[in-house]
Length: 355
Image (cartoon, rainbow, N blue to C red; front, side, top):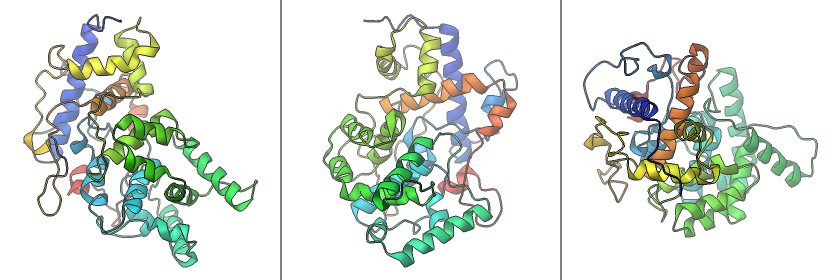
């Protein structure tokens, strides 16, 4: 058993500061606390990596705008569980915020969802409409793909699905392919298996079996669907699949740790966050403990008042990325928030998106 208590103390202080600033930024943007956000490191020096527009996913899912949107809008929409699940997948598989509004050319974040049953039924009028919206988005330079994740494997998998389905081995990738591929999850049993899963590791295993999904999208896909109250699994079950950023951090924090035990490093951080200084002076605001639907009913059964297993992996991954880009302004600018919910050619901030 590796001794996780033997960590890089100075790096842990930077880790704590990173969490403090990411949390502070979100709380200021949501008006949970007052104050002006400053992009500085723990020594008070200017820090490109902590810029106000440099995107990092908050470890608390109630402060991750994508997770929040799934929980408060997609999960509450008037559609069946298959459409709810498929619309949840594309939130991450495409990646850009507001992608549903772009694909449907809707200005209503509560009424902008794809009808995957119509795609399965080959409703040509509906399909042509969505494809036209994709053309519009390209002309108006509204992003569909997120900028913080590499979607190549998913794009390839969806293209290959269409090649096989239509017996067209030379077909080139089209943005719409992703929707057809995700629609197939209704028929191939993927959705049913997720609905039957009782642990997040089971949902992960189901998604991992899909071509092109891999560890990253299987883990985050399982987490994204876990915020749906219709599911039986949740993000604080003891299972993680450390991503590249998290692995980079673990290698820096514990150079001698065996790679096969990297998940244990995340468990250690989550279970000892207070005693090792990771959460020193980090204030989790009560308004972030849950999210509420239109009827003021809390979506989650338990309180998000501390780091959870999934959130600790996210935090580790984001900090690992930060360590690699913090001294590179160009790299930091590449991680600026990618949004496709601007229908008035004006900049929309995080607070406006989440309202």
